[in-house]
Amino acid sequence: MNELNKPLILYGVPLSQPVRAVMWLLLMKRLPFRMVLINPGSSGENGSRHPTFLAKNPSGTIPCIEEPDSGFALGEAHAILSYLSRKHGWTDVYPENDQLRAKIDWFLHYHHRNVRVAALGLVAPKIRKDLDIAESIQSDARRTLNAALKTLDCDLLTKNRYLVSDTVTLADIAGYVEIGQLQPQFTNVLDMSSFPNVQRWLKDMAKVDAHDDVHVVLKELGDISVEAPSMDTIKRANKKALSQLNERLLDFC
Image (tube, rainbow, N blue to C red):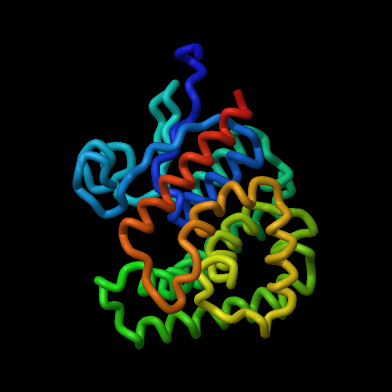
């Protein structure tokens, strides 16, 4: 490959919800990329707190992208999604219409505190029992997420097929990786049967191109509602997902 045409680098792990959002967009758009595994929170050589990684993304979070041709690096999934869409002219998922784009931006801001943090508050205690996350925190997360799902079910998804329009946008990609992971076929940590429009949206999103490729890690991890997965199980799930991702990327060559 020409030195000036090296593929985009995506730093992270497939188990990370925001990393999966960026993966999904890249696969949908068939943009060649290479995933480099980064251990979140670790200061080791391949960790997100290592000086080399912090030089690219000072917040020490995943995902982070890097463009090898220019050296430009960018963290935060929502910033990455909108940046790539603007750069490559992906107006189907990030329309040029100012008002529609503003609605997508609104959801991405709303999502961060009302969906992402709450969903994480349900999954993290099951994944990381060692963190001993208080039951009160988990209860708060459940209340916040149920309130957000009610907003989606009774408002957004009554007006449109998807979250802000009748076609898939960045809002849906960001929203699904958090909400979709809670379903029975994945982690199975939240009953969403009382939200029929959300249920319909989840089924629609499961038909979007590359959905299955992006969610290999969750299939491998399985139901965590009763028993927390071991670290070996988590590592195997990430490695399996990365292996299948690399196979899919071969189609882009």
